[in-house]
Image 1 (spheres, helix red, strand yellow):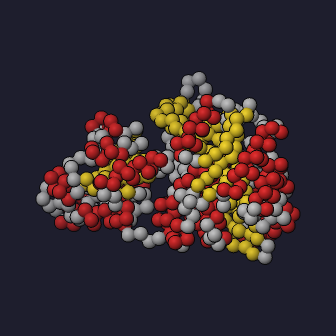
Image 2: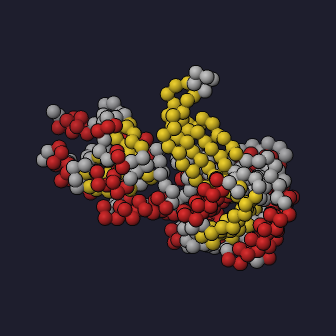
Length: 474
């Protein structure tokens, strides 16, 4: 499977649909407003990412593919922000300006919980003939250059009947498959598509009746829809029950791969992007679905709208040696640069981790939830001896790094030889710097190089010193 996975790199995928800007305001809630019974969120951090159909492109980029986006933007500030993002990520695009505002979804997050979402958009946006023709001409220009087509319909105006049917017909004539992430009950516009990827709610809506989340009910509903709209297949996403693939005379039910769900935002985009990349590479439909399910399981374990990365998917498909997460200090800057280019939120923490115990595991899991990538700075043997005496460490740095690397929460490990990780923190400039709860924020080394510094309380009753004392009987 890893050999097949490598074949998706460089595949050219046309994405047509509604792009939007996802903006996040992250903060703390410590009191209720005296003006109304609502929480006051003190904002610590604000950032924006590409959303909607543009998030499909982000996922494709993360997988090593070459996305080509055709869509509409407003002639406004948020539209300019999105153009800049596309440019910085080097995503090929044809984005046409309209009189409507750029679709923007702003989420207010307090204490790691979404408090409210603000949507900026115009109701019932319709394409005029001129804009519609611009989109159709762009599709005609793009089709000869690409391997597969994705229609990402958020029902915001781009994917009307004319556009969808033109894209499906033109793609079919050129032997290109069309994958559709649908919206609404008007599936006539999707007629004759290759694969449509509804969730259970969308399947129920187009069926005209509530479909239970069990295999037989989904198969029966999907069979009727396949015949009614002359579709090649459906891939139904079923939340905690995984996915079901239904084609004429064939079906496949795949259990979920999510180990723990933190945020389902963008999971559908990840499924569509991974499926498109795999099919473009000639991977079989069963293996393509397997990869898509793996990818979805990874992204729902992250906070916010986060794309899948090739490295993450590859790691899921192979039994890696734990040391594969170990980064030589000389390569750290290059690794961080790549992560920044992929818009990853980087969390850093450090320690000796001499005898790993429950407290360490809980601490590292909490740290990972604060971002996308957790880098752990590990004291070298020599630095531990200087800090704790000649009797330490109990386990050498090779053993300690191997045990840390076996933890799912840990993405990278870098060993530092100095007494403090100051130089590493300076190189990484982490989004979040995490230390144990016994540190005062103002005394944490390197906090001036981090965007945010956070302390996490230790689990009572667990410490390496206590463990060593218990073993020695002292």
